[in-house]
Length: 499
Image 1 (cartoon, rainbow, N blue to C red):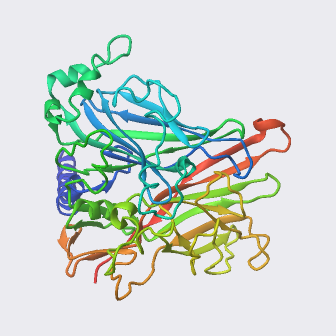
Image 2 (spheres, one colour):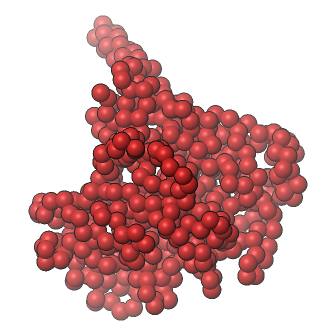
Image 3 (tube, rainbow, N blue to C red):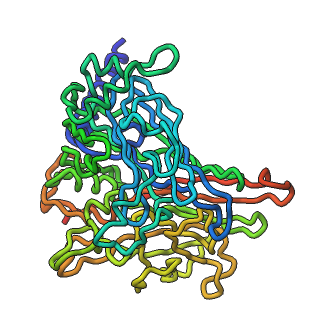
């Protein structure tokens, strides 16, 4: 008995110490913006959609992008769904979605003769309520180009083809509690909401919804499906938790709220050594950016000839358009962490690149990543010039992207045997006199494991998300049944320095 009591006391003391560490080091996570490792949050970021053709060129093996949004909670959610083209994240479609408890919304981005559209047979309430009522050309569910085709020109092209790839986001604007609103959203035994017209009628007077702050619990995913090519690349959305502590409702079609509209000005990031950095910013946008900032992006590539394999990496900067805008006007210092505003069809950010084969061999840092087609102003260094970028290996172009950069590790100058291995993208460009926050976010107010960080902290890198896709073909089986592949989320190095 004495032994058990001593054991209990020791365990209690140990638990108390851990609780104390939690109160000091980890309490910030509960009230700060952070990437939710368990996949549930109030903001969902989907790095890529496409309706382009596998391999590009004259191929007609087009992708569809299938989408899901899941409300895992017992609360009612008012959600903004926004699709953005890939060059500078110009909005191409926006609507509001009202989810009842445990509800799921699904849809698909498909190709049209000149662009793309969103289709859905889901019954959850959306505003406008007629979004999916008809599918004729140029109706509400077809992606639009009026933002990037306007004046002044951004130089990135004005056709609807530009809207055939990009990224999208789902933002929980609020929970709604008004009893009329909740009754309107609930589904009957046939699976139909009681009164979606209520949400259309009150879109401009959201006070009638009885809004309270978003509380998270959303999850989602997407699948890049190519029936003709026999491929399916599926991924989970990146979830941000504690994005806003107040309701931030925007009408359907409104460009707000966006990722900068959150009202939580703090971020929490776990460093590689296990320490917890909680940073305080002047606005919610920098908090979101800090939570997503990585110095290094790491993944694998496969280019084996026996399986006709190929690899593409998707590299998306979800906050870039808000921080940079487009078409630079006037002069003056740019605000980091990105390099330049979007102009002449591009906004280029320098990156370093190094790769190793599976036997540890590397030629060192390489500067042979080439944009294709080449931008109007050719970059001098390895540069990502868009907001949704695709880095293809040895011209694989599995996703058929036009926001494309090619790296061939098999060329003679490197080593023709480098067909399998892994690569490391780095964002470590040094600041300049006019861009003091280049590829870094700095704040004077931060804590490390709960203790004040004297001199503040610097988050090195860029806010980035994405994944790699790999494709293989089995020559012993005919047709598309011989094709298979996989999708692998990027791995990240998060470097937060303290002077």
